[in-house]
Length: 69
Image 1 (cartoon, rainbow, N blue to C red):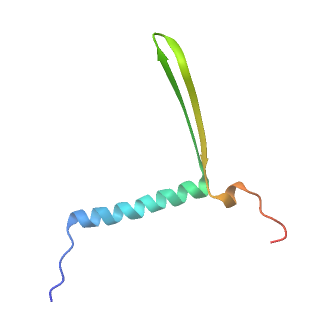
Image 2 (cartoon, one colour):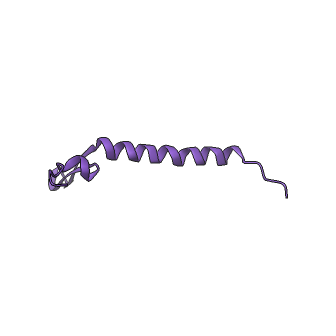
Image 3 (spheres, helix red, strand yellow):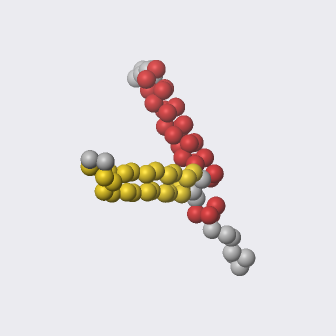
């Protein structure tokens, strides 16, 4: 049976998956801080203020190593 040739689209999709995994690995190893603010108001009056902060990193980067292990 003849083997089907890969299309250019399949090559791009396979490369994108590898790149996404590399980005996620890099983010978890180095860490990233995300920060955002949302203010909801009506007629110039602020009604709701929301501030979001998130730190994304691997747990072994954040927590100190234990001497007993």
